[in-house]
Amino acid sequence: MSSAVPLTADQIADLANTLPLWRVDDAKAIARDFKFADFSAAFDFMTEVAGVAEVMDHHPEWSNVYDKVSIRLTTHDTGGLSDKDIALAEAVDAAAISFKGH
Ligand code: H2B
Image (cartoon, rainbow, N blue to C red; front, side):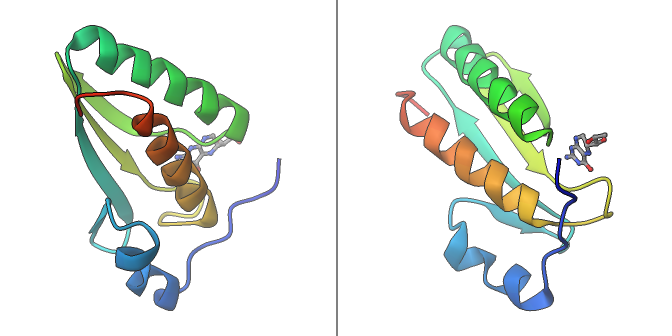
C-alpha cells in the first residue's frame, strides 16, 4: 500500500473547488454530513463506504444517529490532510449518489 502524500497549502486552499460538498476543518480534516431516508439507508451507505475504506486502507472517522451520518476524513499517519483523504472523499461522494434522501 502506497504511503499518503500530504496536501500542499495550495491544494488545501483549493478544496472548496475540488471537493465542494466538504467543509475544511482547521486545514487538518474535511467533513460532510448526510441525511438518508431512514436508518436502513444510512447503514447501507456506511456498509458501502466501509468496503471502499478497507480496499483503500484508509478509514473514516464517523458517527451515525438514525438517518444521519457524519464523516470526517484526516490522515493519522501524516497528522493532516493527504491525497488519500481526497480519494476517499471522492468515493464517498460517488456512493452517496446512489442513495436517495440524503
Ligand atoms: N486511515 C486514516 N484515516 N488515516 C491513516 O493514517 C490510516 C488509515 N492509516 N487507515 C492506515 C489505516 C494504516 O494504519 C495502515 C497500517 O495502513
